[in-house]
Image 1 (tube, rainbow, N blue to C red):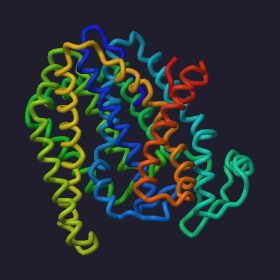
Image 2 (image 1 turned 60 degrees about the vertical axis):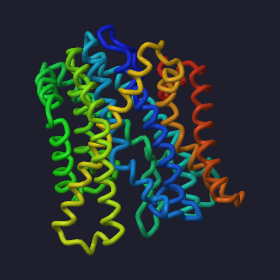
Image 3 (image 1 turned 180 degrees about the horizontal axis):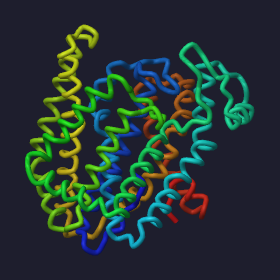
Image 4 (image 1 turned 45 degrees about the vertical axis):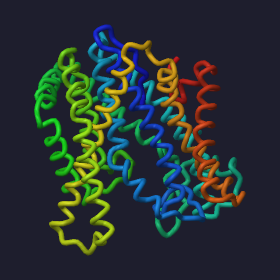
Length: 398
């Protein structure tokens, strides 16, 4: 999500177009998912008075792998860039600027309206936005209820940025020390045989069974062991598999995931059906421990197989148009994704409760929420990309 690709001379454009295509599609799924979070029964920043629990199984289709796919793409892109960068230290500084500027802007400005709307809804805060902002910037700890206190300032959906920044610095440190080449050699072995499928699945299943039980998802960076294990693994899998130095190895990997696309899609569907089937018959607390462990292991299939399938289908799509010029629309959308990611949740959290006041039919309200969030995010990008250095603070490359 954080880099717009400029194809290196030795890379085939369709390989990089596949990564751009997946990033754009993953962002589209992210907007749909966050719009869904407004309506389902799960806790979120603001909630619709009309809960739609039937939407929750649809949300579960993408939730195990959607963000992991973005980390795979980020790792692959950085590995490809690092191979061309003459100085990994300068690349680390550039990476820090690209990721930390939007994070700082988000902490103090962009996310502030989200926290304000949440305080109004959950804590019945009656002050103005400006009054709340002064307390937000002062890190006021008094916004509390029986469930706990709101951490202020907060990064909310921008948690992705410090996570990918951390993994990026580790990767570039390994490049500087000369150790990354050995990891890529392991990645070459991983990509050549059946271990491409079973070894990441086994690893994700092990992580789910050992860490998730004790360290549920928090997105607070310092107390998030399970998510770090999951997303760091996805990041480095992308770097060592898709970011191979040799063109022939990259070609072979892309061809392989293309051949496996239907098999991995079928396997992912079986794993998802098993998940839905078990959860529709038994509640988790009613299952014995061995069954819970098996279901957590099943999550490994739901996390990795859809990613391999997505890579294969994206490659096939780009290969079919390989004789055509690079897509100007895809390039535009790929350049927009990071800025739209920074903006979209604030747009959604402010817009949703105000749309609810109109008391529209639920399908019309939900459709409007999705369309307006997309459109407002795009318009924000189109304005900010003409705003010079200001755009850098919202994830736009100069």
